[in-house]
Length: 318
Image (cartoon, rainbow, N blue to C red; front, top):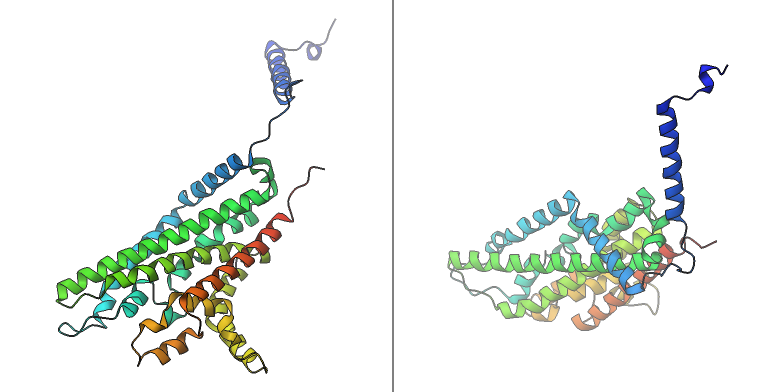
């Protein structure tokens, strides 16, 4: 006589059969078919998918839209600040002064104030990988970390440049409306277009610098502190110290953010009486065109170093 324990119930038999069938189907699906090797995803397609992922990741965060909304509101409030510098019956404001206002006052604050709002968006793509560990498996989806890093750079650059350009446009529209309502003369808006475009390029480079520093330092907090302190304090002190070394006079004007300030502010566009003070705030004798090239060169070099740091921990096939 068989014991009750040795006689399986119908439910237990059905469950075991289902589990066996599922395991067999899974094994069959996972096993590659003979004679049909897996086709690797083309690099261009992998890059497109990675860019789409990065954009969806940013667009899916509520903080992204909150920051962009705050930036839009502050850009619209630019018109109120214009009234502080213009007389209703006086001459129109200079184009250089208006350009400084609509590009978030880089002359007074040493970097555009918009930088501090975009720090989270700039550092987020790589710092998220550090927290979630997603970077360890990116090679499975996008043909290597190099493709993932390039996608992060492109999306970050476009978001930073588009945000800055849209902010300058909103600020210009707000300023024009406020000046018209107050009866003040309009500045030469045509001379504000080029500074606004340089502002967009500058903010795109800022997003790349944020990405690169997070990749190099592998931290979420230290790069933010570095980006806040270096252009405002550290670089000025370093430039002053280097200038005391014989043969290095004026080297401070060639440092990264000194070139960045010269890129944003065309000192030659100010009245002759205001140029010495504006040049002292900029801290560089470079004209806007060579300053733009130098700042972009610094950005490319730092972004390349960040790519090396990001890719050297890539997974291997072994």
